[in-house]
Length: 369
Image (cartoon, rainbow, N blue to C red; front, side, top):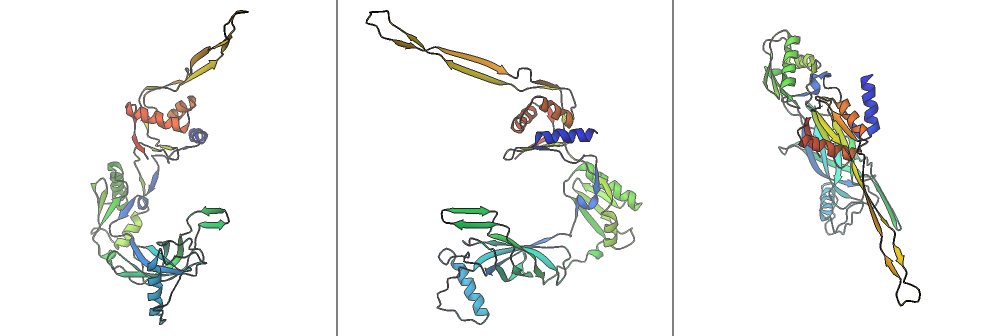
């Protein structure tokens, strides 16, 4: 019932969301990375053909013509001295990620982005493009039709663009040609790296693994690292890791408040507490009324009519009763109740939270983006 009331309060604020409960449990595999088990980035340069007049122009992208000429010569077509205007061709950069333990012949997704002045890659086909790793070796080859989610429509006197038509993707568009050698099953120890280093969480991971294995095989090196000694365990490292990674562990979530000023989004952690503090939200209303008075001269006199200014200024402070008193160790729901009682907007709420943090009344990490 308490969670339902809290959710209703959050919906009423529109721009405020709350993270999952801090005392919830998650799997070890979702909070750690295993040393040596990682992805590798790949990149390559290629050309896209088959565009409907939306490709690169020779004047602004001369490298596109050079690339097309080189490709045709490799295919046995001599185009030296020819005037090529490849408005249906675009030069692109192709990026991909090589998964851990990827084998020859497996497929991976690729992303394609224009580097010239092409207007759109819609309907284009990427020609055979080698993808290299950081060591300069080719690990995959990409080719295929590009899927573009952006839209660019132009007409006389009007244009409309949605998304980015100069970038797209090719699902399963690259085939792995080289494997990364790594003898994982020869390891006698493993290193678990926490994605969010924390002393409490690392200690919980150590205790959970030791309790499940029945012996002290896990050792917390620091808040971001837990070492595993596999020498006393039976089975291959792969089997041992498979039995460990799905163990539930309690994750300690720090008290944190994140404010995104651009979108007006405020995220407050459940463990945020507040010391005893009073919050006042009031506005000053200034009203100026002009009531000019015309002064007439006496009859049969040589005087002139004069307009005399008459101004009335009224200063009134509205919301004088909008004062909320929050007792010590206030929880998230109580904080929202107090701010709702003031009728503040998300922008005003962000200002109040920053002021409370500056006053030392709020106990949480404040991140402003």
